[in-house]
Amino acid sequence: MVAVQSVALEKVFAQLLEPDSFEDYCPNGLQVEGKAQVRRLVSAVTASAAAIRRAAALRADALLVHHGLFWRGDDQRLTGVRFRRVRLLIEHDISLFAYHLPLDAHPELGNNARLARVLGWRVDGRVGRYGLLSVCELARATSVRSIAIRLRQRLGRSPLVVGAIDRPIRRLMWCTGAAQDQLEEAIAHGADAFVSGEISERTTHLAREAGIVYFAAGHHATERFGVQALGEAVAAQLGIWHGFVDDDNPV
Image (cartoon, rainbow, N blue to C red):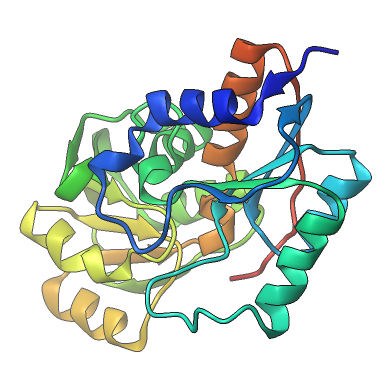
């Protein structure tokens, strides 16, 4: 089996995602150092203990995730849950690579781009900082019910829908994960509907009063696809093995 240096793997990630171009809430790139050589790469949405254990069971040398272990404002001490996750990585000599906003934004491999592919939405434009909001001009007016059904069928869970739920939709926008606070930006760009992962209490009032539809389709559910696409693309480029583990999350 082909082996590559861990530093070479990180270099390929950096060439694809350009993480230094982003001001993020976390360190992008190598977060925990493991084996110097990588033959087997596993991807997952989040560096949970369950995902790390499953990666170890697959004999992973490196784990690629969207949600890593370290976030701005967190307690920096390695205690409790974070310590146990780091200990698992060290015990199994697994390197942890994490990419947050750079993975959301990538125009081909990113979460927004891959969600569009899964749902069959054409990307007609990208707006906002880093192009994090994607736009689709639907060919014809579409009902809220039709979009909700498509989300349920393709993502395996029913979205929570709030706002002006009786209006027809022509201009659809989306941003995966916890992008409910970008609803105002979507409104400013003339969206009829906005799809994201999570929802806050204030989201309902804003959507109702602005006359827009908001679909909360699940943070995890909307962000399963980018990390898989990135892992597959990099593994194919380098000739190493890749597998995906899904530690399901209802949020």
